[in-house]
Image (cartoon, rainbow, N blue to C red; front, side, top):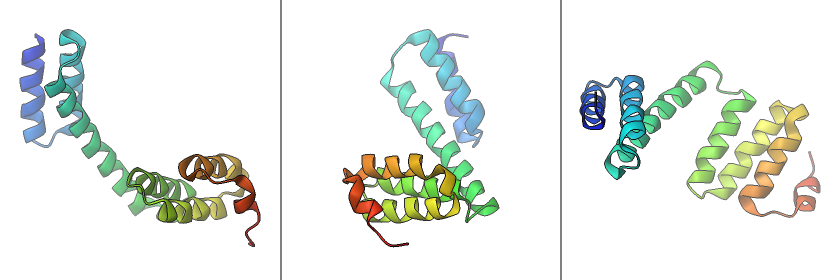
Length: 123
């Protein structure tokens, strides 16, 4: 199959809400045709839906998992809602103290915060 065929296959699978097979078809199209804005758009859209479905499942299975709070923080970070992102990173840290360093680093990177401002907060 050529790149155009994989694009059509991906669009058909997308219409059928078969997001994983759709993304596979779009990736195959890119591999054959190189950079194509239309194909990349559809690939990104299919990945977005898959990511959203996965995150929703994660929230259902483990709403208070430190990883769920970490993912919520990442979503807020993408929306430029730094105060909410920080709150979720802090919740993640409460659930997983041993991984505090990586979460703390993410907070600082997200918000350009001087580390001492976080460490100075009371528990």
